[in-house]
Every structure is written in structure tokens, then in C-alpha cells.
Image 1 (cartoon, helix red, strand yellow):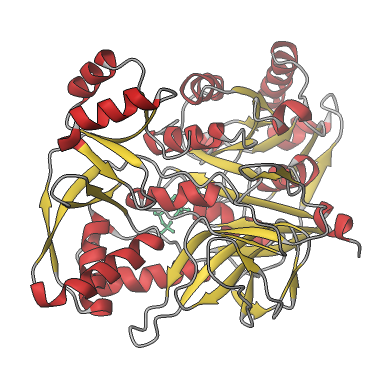
Image 2 (cartoon, protein in one colour):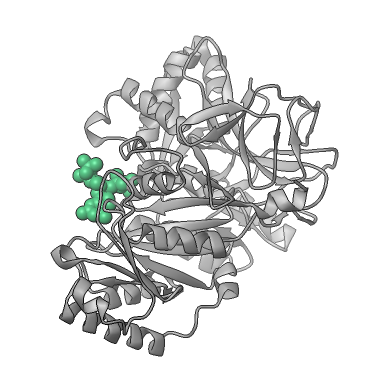
Length: 526
Ligand code: G4P
């Protein structure tokens, strides 16, 4: 198969959702349709259970599970689908943001009872930064949820994207009977099943078919005809190009646990979702069809065995063919790297592979050479853009509890930060070190891992900080002057970039007003 054919065959995406909306359940149903698993219940949730929050071993075990399910590859109707998992716990949101840089599109699950929730809004903002195409799946229609028209309005308002329903629910709650496929203009009626895929389906091609009444009852049949007429009148025709540009989100309704509406979405997904797209370096566009290999590391996962500090680095292939045992240019590093242990993930299994293509994700065994954001190429010196850090929400100062173990502490912190566990800032004055995270849980994970993997002990002292803002200015003199006058609040991030540590929202606003020539950014990429 030629490189172009390999690329066309692939679709790499992630499912994102507010916890509990049904991401794990939907993943499982997609794997069932792909024939990658035979019965439901095989996919483990990567949720970190609140009840086990204080049990570190349990967290580590659960992190182990999440490695196994980091990428789930499967084939469906001749398409190679790479589904990337995103952490269920919102304290690991930064992991999710990074995963989104490695996909070409996203399926967003929304609970029809709860509507658009906070985490969904945040994730959508990240998708919008890169114009990632989004498909919405409104789930749990077997419950008495909100009115479908209201839900569509809410998605448009809160997520700030135009919507276009491509399937429509027939009834809701106890009266939920299935979905009408607006895209293919047909109705598949399945027998609901939680455990397996049902083959008993009745297909109705024409809504005026008298059979409809017999199957779903007169009132539901009339309601469906009315709804379809209304939708087709209100919404413009679905434009695939607009979806691909991230301007309109097609919406599907269903019930993942009952297998309703999943097939309609998957069939449409494989037709419209983008194949691997170009990626951008600081200097140029890299097209997937380019013959020379290039790719970037978006996630690193430490192995749990403290005696072997092996890590798995996840590489997204952007162009050309990646080959096992071939030396590649590690753009940031001093020497070329060669990988003999290249893992690909198919559903629940991992296997060693000799080659991989754009859109694929492979796991590379690494002994500490790689870090998040690194580019690997077949020669060219270039660095892919697009792995931003976001301002953390919680900040704590690192207090070294054992002066004899300073080196270990520094090494441990450096490596954990390279894995992306948290962010690290060093104040210009006094060299104070600050760890910033999205959630409380990471501090506990860091403390545990420092002790067990690096034999270092640290405490974290709470700090009263609102945001870390990366600063820039077109006027270097003004920037220097700002850094001088605010020196007590200036720090450097892990890459040495200048950061202003704002203590409160009001104060930040005041500083912004007083220094109009300085730009304040909430992400490290601007
Ligand atoms: P997540 O990964 O997004 O966090 O959600 P997950 O799939 O784990 O689903 C959260 C809960 O919602 C689960 O129930 C799951 O069974 C349920 N669920 C998923 N899809 C549907 C649906 O279409 N209809 C209904 N009614 N429920 C759905 P749970 O009680 O937390 O777990 P379980 O014991 O049922 O597995």
C-alpha cells in the first residue's frame, strides 16, 4: 500500500467529556462495532475513584490501566481508527489538553440530563485553539433529559459553535425508541442491548412508510415526521467543509449503554472525519504525504518499577514512514536516537511493530532522553508547534525536607515535569521553586513519586497566586523595564520563558491596565 493510501485509511481522534457523561461506555461500544472486543465490560474506566483518592498505590495502579488504554486502535469498514484515551479525572486535565494536540478530530459526549458542563466548556476552548473538528454525541436519551432543541441551543451558546443535528431521537426516557439518521435519511430500529450488538434491525428508508406507525406507534411516528420537517427547515444543509474547519459541529443523539445511535454516529464519522492533517513547525507546514518521517512526543508515562527508570513516550507520526531500529534526529538532543522497542496498541493488546504511518501513535521505550514536545525527524532540524502549557490553577512552593537529598529532589522534579505531571516555575529573585497544577491530586502524586522513585522528600507550602501569565512585548525596552519593576513577581517556566505570577484577578487587571504595551498570555504558546 502506498504512503498516501496508508494516510487516507487512518482517522485519529479522542473522545472527550465531563466525567460520567459516558466516555468509557461509548469507547467500549465503538470497540464492539470495530470487532476489537466481543463483549461489553472489557474496557476499564480510567477514572480515579474519589474513594481511593488517598490510596497512592491505587492511583498508581489506575495510572497503569490508563497506559494500557492510552491508544486503542481498531479497524472498521476498512478504516484504521486510532482512538486516544483522555484521563477521566479533571485534575489531569492538562494531560487531556496535550492529547488533543495529537488527534485530528474529537467526539464530545454530553449527558442529556446535565447538558453542557464546565469541563466540556474548557475542553472545547482547547479544540477551538486549533480548529479541531468536533462531533457531539448527546448521550443517555433513555433517561428523562432536557428537550433536544434546548440542548442544541445550549451547545451553541455555551460551546460557541454552530450545530447541525444529523440524527434525531424518537422519544426520550422510558419512551425512547431509537434515532432517525438525518444524514442518510433512514431509520434503523434495533433491539436495545447492553451486552452485545443486536442484529435484529428493521430499516425504514421512507418516513411516510406506513410501517413506521406499526413499529413505534402513531403518535411517535407523527412527532418524528414533524421534527424532521422542522429541523430540515430550520438548519441549513450539513456542510462537511465547515465541519472540517471546526465551524460547525454535527450532533448525534443516543444512548451509549443501550447501543442506540452509536452506529449512526460511527458510520458518519468514518465518512466525514478528517484523515491525518498537516502539522506546523515554527517555520513551515509539514504534510503527512512527505516521504521523510517526522513526529512529536505528546505524552510520557513512567513505568512503575523504581529500579528501572524506563518510560514510555507516546509519539504521533506526522509525516512519512516511521521504522523500528532506524536512527532518527532527536532535534533537541545531542545525538540521534534509535528505537528497538516500538509498541502499537490494538484495543486491549500491545504489539511490537516495525513500521507506522502518519496518524498512528506508537509507544517508545525511553530511558530519560525524551520529553514532552520533542520532535523526531529523518534529518531535518525543525520543531513542531502546538503543545502549549496552560496556566495552572493551584500553586505551591517546594520545601526541601532533606538538605542531603537536594540533588535527588532536583532530578526528580525535573523528570516529573518532563513527563508533564505538573508545571514548574523558578522565581528570578531568591530562586524560590513553585509547582503549579490543575488539581490537588497531582501534589500528592508528586510527593509519593519523589519519595519512592527518587528517595527525596519535599513538602508543599500553599501560595496565594491566581495565575501564571507568560509575558511578551514587541518593545524589548518596555519588557525589560516591566521585568525590573515587577522583579518580585517574575519567574521562569521550565523552558526559561518569562512568567508574571499574578496574585489576584483584580491586581492582574490593574497591572494590565498600567502596562498596555505588555501582553499577558494564559498559555505558553502565543
Ligand atoms: P465517563 O467515562 O464519561 O466518566 O462515563 P462512563 O462511561 O463511565 O459512564 C458513567 C455512568 O453513566 C455509568 O454508570 C454508565 O453505565 C452510565 N451510562 C453511560 N451511557 C449511558 C446511557 O446511555 N444511559 C444511561 N442511563 N446511563 C449511561 P455507573 O452507574 O457509574 O456505572 P456502571 O456501574 O453502570 O458501569
